[in-house]
Amino acid sequence: MKTSRDRILTTHVGSLPRPAELRRLLVAKDQGEPYDKAELERLTRQAVFDIVRRQAETGVDIINDGEMSKPGYSTYVADRLSGFAGHEPAKPRLDTRDHPNFMAAYERMTGGNTARRSVCVGPIAVQDREPLAQDLANLRDALAEVGAVEGFMTAASPGLVPVFQNNRYYPSHEAYVEAIAAAMQRGDAGRIRGDRRSWFCAAARLPGPGHGAPHLLPGSERG
Image: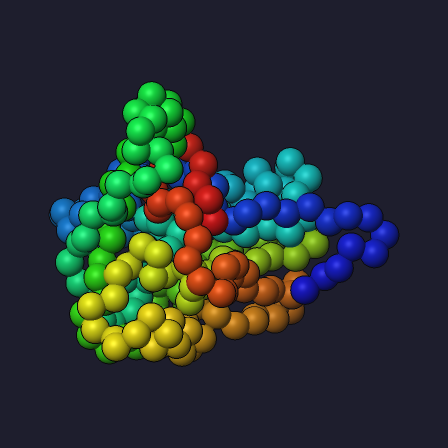
C-alpha cells in the first residue's frame, strides 16, 4: 500500500454508481429472477473498464472497480459464502421513523432498498471463488490501460456483515463474527501483487455494527 510522500494521494470510499442496465441484471439475480449470465458478465466487465478509466481521467490515484459486480456492499457475501438463505426485511430505523418527509427525500436520492438480506442458517465457508477471480481479472485488465498509482478492492468486513445478515445459527454474536472473519480471510481478503502495481484489499468497520442500509442504487452507495 503506497503512502503519500510527495503529495496527498487521492482515493474514494469504494462503491460507485452502476450503469442502469447492469443494475437491472444485478437486481434480477439478487431477487432470484431469470437473467442472462453471459450478459451480466459482459456488462460487469465493461462497467469496470469504464469506471476505472473515469477515475483515472478525474485524477484519482488509488483506483478500484467501483464494486460493479456486487448488488450491495455487504449483502453480496450470501452468494459467495455458504450458510446463508432466505430474506429478512430490515427493521424500521428508529432515528428516522418519525420523519417520513426525510425518508422520502432520502429514497429519491438513493433509490429504494431492494437488496436481499439473507439470514445465517448454517456453517459459514467459502463456496464460490469464481466471482472473486472475475473481479480481480476485470480490475487487473482495466488498470493495465490507465496510469494509476495503485489499485484496490473492497470487501465486506466481519463486523459489517451481521448488520445486514442476521444470525440464526451461531450461539453468539462473537462466534458469528469469528466465523465470518475466517471465511472472508480465505475468500475476499488478502493482498495481491501484480507485475506493475501493488494491490490491497480494503475492509472497513472491523469492530462491530455500523449504520445505514444496503442498496441497489441508481446513484452512489456507501462502500
